[in-house]
Image 1 (tube, helix red, strand yellow):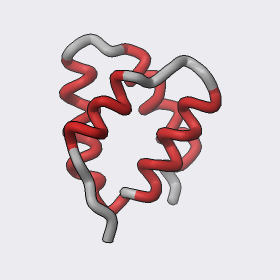
Image 2 (cartoon, rainbow, N blue to C red; image 1 turned 90 degrees about the horizontal axis):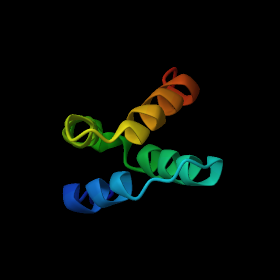
Image 3 (tube, rainbow, N blue to C red; image 1 turned 45 degrees about the vertical axis):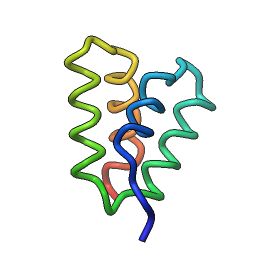
Image 4 (tube, rainbow, N blue to C red; image 1 turned 120 degrees about the vertical axis):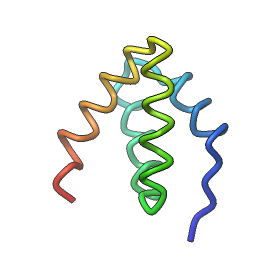
Length: 69
């Protein structure tokens, strides 16, 4: 089981760039830590509430590509 650190994940979300490489990297990381999906979603929501719209774009892209798994 992988270790999940909410603070580290929030930093990843906040440093997310509007590029394919950045989004794919974060997507791969999320898939590696998918057993912590509740914490991941909670972090996403906190960042979204702060007005980080790039994070919203990432969530949409991630769910479009990996939501069926």
